Every structure is written in C-alpha cells, then in structure tokens.
Image 1 (cartoon, rainbow, N blue to C red):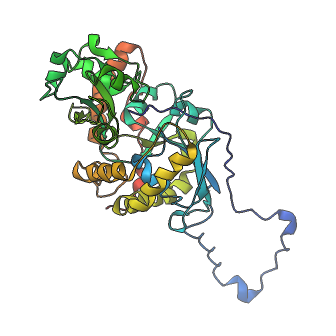
Image 2: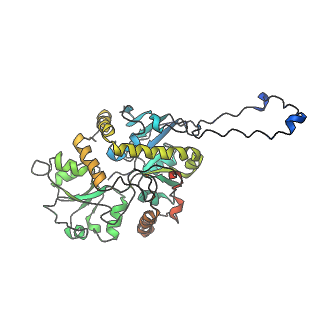
Image 3: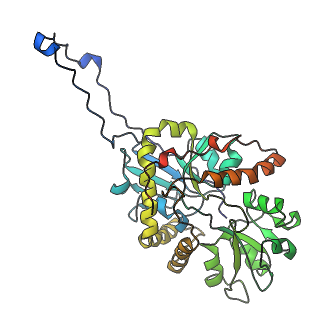
Length: 389
C-alpha cells in the first residue's frame, strides 16, 4: 500500500576515521645496532574488529508512517527516542547492542508525497531507504541502487474486498467481479495483475491516497489496496463503513497473486554502499539482530509506535489491538521468516529473478529501462555472519 515517498529534511552524516599522524611529528629513526638488526620486525597491531568505520550519524528513510512493519528499524533506537512533529521523524542514540563501528545516533524519517525514496537516495537526503524490490527493479536503469538487506521476508501488501458484495474465491474472480480496484499510482503488483489477466484495465483505479475516504463513500463495493497487517484490522474493528459499523473483509496478499515481492528492502546508492563497505560489514548484521529482537518481543516498540504517531499528530494512527493482530499475522503468514540461508537478512536470488522476469516485459512495454541482471542491484555480501531467528 505504501508508496515510497519522502519528507525532505536536511541531515548530515559525518564519517569518522582514525587520524593519521603527520610526518612532522615522527621521531627520527634510530640506527640499528648489530643485535637489533638480527631481530625480526615487529608485526603491526591489527585494527580492532569494531573500529570506528561508520558515520556517527545515519538517516534511514521509510516508506510510510510509523507502523509495526517498520518495527525492526525503530528497534535500533528503541522506545526512548524523540518524535519530531515538524520533521515527522524519530531520532536518538542507537541502542548499545546495535551501536557498532562508531555509529552513535540515528534518524528515521517517514513518508511524504513529493519525492520517491530512490530520488531521496540520489539526492543524498538519506543514507538508506526502504524500497520494495519491485521498485528497485523499476529504478535500476536510471539510478545505481543496491538492496543490501531485507526487512520482512514476505510482503503483507494485499487487495481486500467485502465478501458480501464481491464473491471472490480465487484470483481469477477479481476480473470476473468487474469491481474497481483502488490503488496508489504506479503500483507494480497492480501492473502484474493486469498483465496476468487477474484484473482488467477497466478496473484500474489509481486514485488511492492511503485513507479510508473512498472506500467509506463507496460503501465498500470496490477492491482496495492495503496491508494485511494493518487495514484488515482497521476495517473490521475501527472504521464504520458498512451500515454505520465495521465489517469483515477478505483479502489476497500479493504473494497469493503470484507476485512474490520483498517489501521495504534496505536500499542504498551503490557509491554510498561502497564508501561505507567496512561499516556495512558490521552494521548490517546488527541491524538484522534488531529485527530479530523486535520480532521476538515486539510489544515495547509497537506500544511506542502508537505514541510516535500521536506525537506526529497526523492522520495515521495505530492501536494496541491492531498491533497485536498484525504481529500475529506476521508470524502465522511467515512474513517474518528467515531467509533460505538461515539468516534474517539475505535475499533469495531465485525469488528476485522470478520477480525480475515478471517485471521485465511490463517495464519494457512502459518504456522503462531496467538493469540487465539482478546482480546489478542485489548484494547479499553484507549478510555474511548475520543472525537468524
């Protein structure tokens, strides 16, 4: 549901390196005597494993307002960070368990609707950003992007409907229903549904803005994009859309529709990733440990996500009931599963290739040039040594 867009906030990331001594400060070399000349030269001391190779500050751009699907990233700061209403961000010291390589503080920025997250990275406004793998593919021909770690393993993005108004039992029934499919413009899974005949072009309605307004006004007769871990609970418990009350909805995840996407992949500009390569070798495993810690004990952070949204004072809100139901779906549907290599980090390259094969003819027909190979935009090397659940 959440398109990758940004609130542009100025931030700085100062890279800290060990200073080299100047030649002027060096003591003159002593002439070796006979005894010392026969001794082997002393080996230089190895640099500490956790040397200060990271910036002291980093900025991560997410793809929506704070929610449980982002919990592992917020876990890096923990519940004691500061929410800023003016910048719609959350910042603070990185928790000690994850503060590797000299990293001290983190800023997590939320969505705005003026700039894509790929553009945020290209403009240097963030160090890392959440970008769905499908959008990494889409932008790979124009911007040198590289996905370096996953957030969730499976995509909770879905399409939902009122089962009393639309009798949909299998994906092919979506086209047969004739119902409008409300979604954000440029959603790759919708393009795939049209290409596969799961929905028709006549059903295509790219006017979704993330709110419940259109669904409520229409009485729920349409099919609508959303997240299984979020909107399903809201429409069934909080939003009075049918006869003045909430009501049950049914849904298919995009995976159910044959679109096996990675949501919100941690993505960087290639030059920035290369610049921070020594940092990422330490930081990526720590970031993924934060995801594991969040998934194993989500409540402290999901409770804080509720209040972060309250402090941001926007239209987006969470509740304890929603978070509990959403986290139950994360576990029951395998959204938070390990990767095939046993880490909670790497991308299954067969999955990425299958996604690329779906998208390649779609983007070719749209005139969008993409990378010639998945090797150009996926890098699992920083997941070496990452933990698993």
